[in-house]
Image (cartoon, rainbow, N blue to C red; front, top):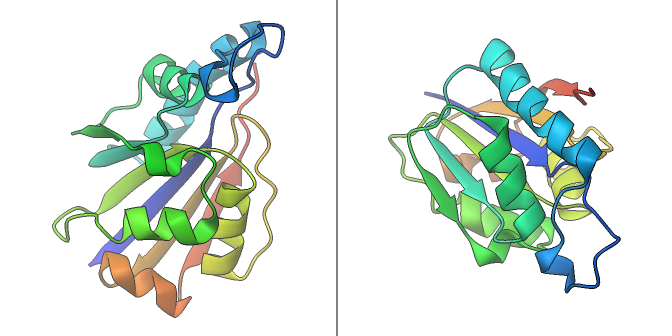
Length: 156
């Protein structure tokens, strides 16, 4: 079975509030661009079986505003400020019957994850999406046989 991991960096956040990092909301540009993420995924990937989303406000707001069609969403605090190794431990827990999973989180972990899995360095700016695919189960991605199917940064 082919597996697809849709890696999504949160949209542009607002630094003008005096709040903890994980409490920063999206700024006006981020609020405009988040729906473009969902549109791009719908057009290029299709339905997503599961979304694994950081608990940070900007990531949750990105997911919510994206309108991403999904069977299920899990907010996971381990995705916030995670290294690529931490992210893979989250992905390793994905049930084997799911084919397409989206991961909504933060850099540098997301960019590093795509680079490690595909061998291709990818810079994920805010609102960026990388689609990674491989044959086999979720833990098989560590064999580094994954391919970078596409990479985009929808802007509005």
